[in-house]
Image (cartoon, rainbow, N blue to C red; front, side, top):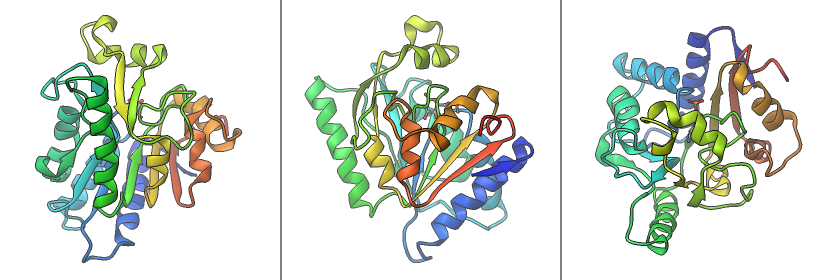
Length: 245
Ligand code: GLP
């Protein structure tokens, strides 16, 4: 657990830990990054963009795998996580949109969406695996869209969104009735397969979730507690998010 004294420092510490995690894989190996949406990692992405502009990093050949996607809106919708990641990550760090993979939230049927989710897990494996997975955490402890109650060994699959998550994300839509009810998310087991996890959380609203994830019992009631099972999980916080540790 690393605590920064302000938002800029949190972003820099997180970016340094992402770059150090990638560097462990050697220059000859293609970079494979796991990408989270949400406001928490935006400063981290900005710092990675800065590293690119200073020639300390280069993501032009990197592969990106998103954590999750909504079901029920097309991937061209401005609030789809594909579009969000293109705007907030690809355009900032120079990762090519064609090298970005996002779970498929549209399909002819539930089995078709789940088959695509299985193929997504297989594609992550085929890439050699995610070297660094960037994460935020929901106020209810969710990782990706693994809501409380998610199986700790789960793989990429269809999930229903918790009421709290739909309320939290309603600000991005014209009203709560427009927020999708379901999603496809990497499972907790999928997330744990990454070589390094870098989770960013800021603000008092995340303090309970962080305390439960970092110091609480390992429990599906707080999906973030799976971090405790990972041998290389870096949690970067500001003072407010760390205040209940
Ligand atoms: C969303 C995403 C998560 C993200 C969380 C927190 O629901 N699916 O991946 O970590 O919200 O978002 P924020 O960082 O904006 O608080």
